[in-house]
Amino acid sequence: MNSFEFVTSPRIIFGKGSLKNGIQAASGFGKKALLVHGTKAAPLETILSILHSESIKYTDFCVDHEPSVELVQQMVALARANNCEFVIAFGGGSVLDAGKATSAMLTNEGDLLDYLEVVGKNQPLQKPAAPCVAIPTTAGTGAEVTRNAVLAVHEKKVKVSLRSNFILPRLAIIDPELTYSLPPLVTAYTGLDALTQVIEPFVSIKCNPLMDVICRDGIIRSARSLYRAYQNGLEADTREDLSLTSLYGGLALTNSGLGAVHGFAAPMGGMYDAHHGAICGILLPEVVRMNIKALKERKSDSPVLSRYSEIACLLTGNSNARGEDGADWLSDLVSRMKIPHLSDYKIPREEFPIIVEKAQKASSMKANPIVLTDEELTDILKATY
Image (cartoon, helix red, strand yellow):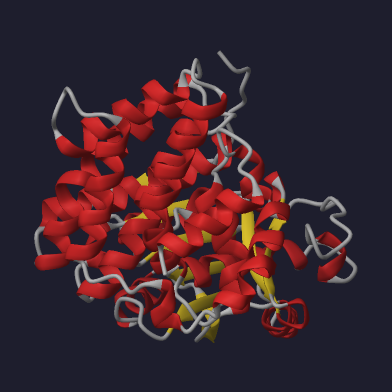
């Protein structure tokens, strides 16, 4: 058993219709908030009326694309100019990450790049972030309970994290009703990200018994509800399953790490205009297949192989399923939800070596259950092309 620690947001409120009670709880953070939201979130009126009833004033900022260093700098300046005491992030993963990074830089001096990993100086934050209230309107990243914020660094063509326990949101409000209006493709993309984030921690080198419990339940919930929600987004029970799986994924990645899927997704998201969840969905079956192959060839006694068999059993409902059957089930799910191939995003084959080089340096790759060679990583890309 690995030694482990468990960190998460101090308070999590989950359940249908929980937005109102959550905002009431947030009113103790101050009288003026920076309200960060997206362009396609649940109707803003949903939260604005509650803010008004709780006498919380706000300055709003719309995040219309994945957050970058420059965007966060704009948000920090706006919040300071308007004397905002805390941040409310209402939207998808990009909005939540932008809100978390902004709350961190409201209390920490210096250049944001100084605190970024991989391309920055990776200096630790010195002070706790301003209070951040994270309210997801999708069911994918679990960013409401993670201690990192993923930001694009355009000049480097990469996405990297601002990472610290200090940026865990002070309050996470997960109301599945906010996801009912998600269109099928967004449901698919975000749901595949969440599914990946309960599979990768279950087989990571940092897996632990506490996270195993929620990963198992998340895999079951996603397997039974993701495709159903893709077909009909108004089924309350499926939306609840996906929102809970997303929350599980955020808890799991924070405490057990991820793997090669996200090792690829970080640099590819910075290099190309492709949805993060779509990249995860495209790569997940082939990463599972390659990890199993590499483990059998080089670590045939690894207990991770039995974990992949368990994942297959949970996905398929077949108690005799092999690890490879799980990869086949995932491939079929991706196909049924019409997820594009890498070639559909016009990712050039000649750039595979660059992608692999950057993926090998990504923090998520370090938790993969086995070190994959450049050739094996390239074969994954070829198989998904």
